[in-house]
Image (cartoon, rainbow, N blue to C red; front, side, top):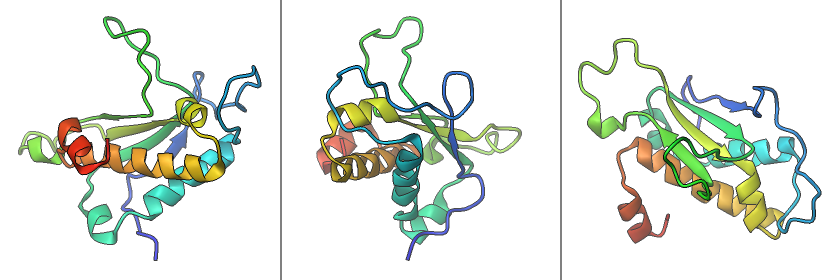
Length: 152
């Protein structure tokens, strides 16, 4: 049975202008084509597969879908990310955190995932791995440890 995620775990699809993302470009790139709605369903299915106990332990997290990661100033302009966790991991929160803190943010990047996948099954698998990876960061698990566990 799917996990019943606590309030505060919405999926908010957004493109560069804040609106729903558009269909993938058909510019000859390799990868698998999937509509934004189908991709959102894959992300929702991955979230629904989180065990209830783990989902209940999550606190103040919003999940977003964006087309692609845009590196910021000082970051490698060639950086490719499948997902990104932004926030304060549960292991680092203290009494100060609750007062007015914004939700942590998990972003799943659609285009890079589609570009590395060859089938619907690949996309579903890669989305699930990416969702688990980013949720693990919310629980304070490092990239190094995730790689050791096979979730890198």
